[in-house]
Image (cartoon, rainbow, N blue to C red):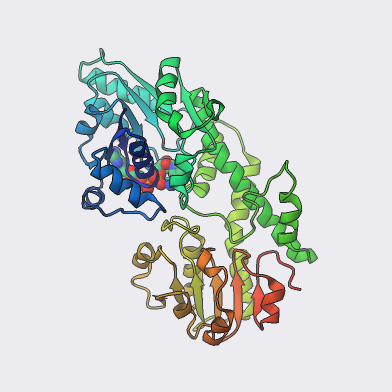
Length: 443
Ligand SMILES: NC(=O)c1ccc[n+]([C@@H]2O[C@H](COP(=O)([O-])OP(=O)(O)OC[C@H]3O[C@@H](n4cnc5c(N)ncnc54)[C@H](O)[C@@H]3O)[C@@H](O)[C@H]2O)c1
């Protein structure tokens, strides 16, 4: 089948490459000329495990192409996906300008029947607006004879395991207005699901809300655990014990129950905010989600307060080794990453930073290029040299079991702030560290 993917970011590139991997012919389009040139030169602009191999294989076999030419890509495709960004605007609403621009472009170049499927996360009602925009463009061109259908196909992949998530998804949601569109999209996606019930067809409105609901639910679990973790510190309980105690209950399950410095990334913060805003516009208050957002914002500051308290609020000229910059492991994405905020707050108070991340340093360096107090280390041990404390922010596997003797030798003071509860408080104490986790019983 022939596919055009408008937007070649984390979602569009992974989706395009994985659709090509199943034998489809895919055109990935982007307005970012530099990104497309790099892709055409064989450089993958994002870090995503397994993606480079798939891209190379499918490019060499002629099934995957990159272009800035929307007209050519639309003309050559039957399915046209929109996977452009929907970042928050100044008020927390989803900014739909890229989506609307993509819709206009499609309307300008449509020559025959196609299915326009939205993959970007958009508020309820947006797919309908996209349909109107495309129809208006066709009217302007005097081409009301051209038929097309719209659909909403939310993407549930997780950065860091996006390829695996796409190739074997828990489910595929297809929101359509008619059976014809559902049938075509089922055919496109059926290779990725073993059992038919895992393709869920529903109305476009339900599909649009399903995407926000999924992210909002996951964010809720994280904020719930963070709030309980703070209470654990008050009463002397240990959130890791509580997590195991509830996560083994089949009705609850173990996923997304980890306390830490709060959720970040390009999806949870913006999607929770956008859902709250879009509900407000319709006169509804989503009170649980308002609290979820508030807990999440406070969580970073709770962690910072712990650091400040340990140093009696005097961190001028203290040096902190920061382990992990990306918003989670296995990605180079630093959008809304807690580490960035933590570094900014620490340096604002006069501290110096020695940071290390396995893949996100190139994205982070430009943010701090004018700040002489932030430097980037060659590896995690180099980051520790002379630092007054280690601050673990992103739980990359290589930070899981460090050589603690070496860590203690390199640090000026044996102090560890563990923002992801990776280490055992009792063992840390035994090894001579002052250890601070999130909601941990200090032993
Ligand atoms: N990143 C994730 O983990 C994830 C997961 C599920 C859903 N989503 C949603 O998918 C959407 C895309 O997210 P992303 O992280 O891939 O964004 P991204 O910022 O990485 O990529 C978006 C791309 O779209 C391009 N673009 C913008 N306007 C364009 C146009 N008119 N024509 C062609 N290209 C255009 C940009 O240049 C950019 O390369 C968002 O709505 C997001 O909420 C993201």
